[in-house]
Amino acid sequence: MSNSLMTIQASAPTALASETATFQPESDLWVALRNPPSDYSHHEALLLCEIDSGDWVAWVPGYGEITLSRSQFYQSEEV
Image (cartoon, rainbow, N blue to C red; front, side, top):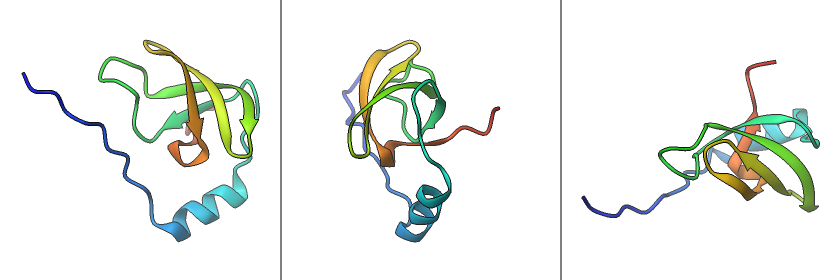
């Protein structure tokens, strides 16, 4: 079994820019992760608090607490 590096693929700048303009993250909101932090973690995260402009402390089931940048998550389809 080999170790693999997790790579984050960014969306096209225009798609991310339009998404950012319409979606405003806030505390206690579930968001979808572009790339889960591990193979065993959930694909969504609960935003806890914003620590810097665009950086959030979040909780991911099956992983724990994590710091996410705005580009690492998007609005969840589930309401």
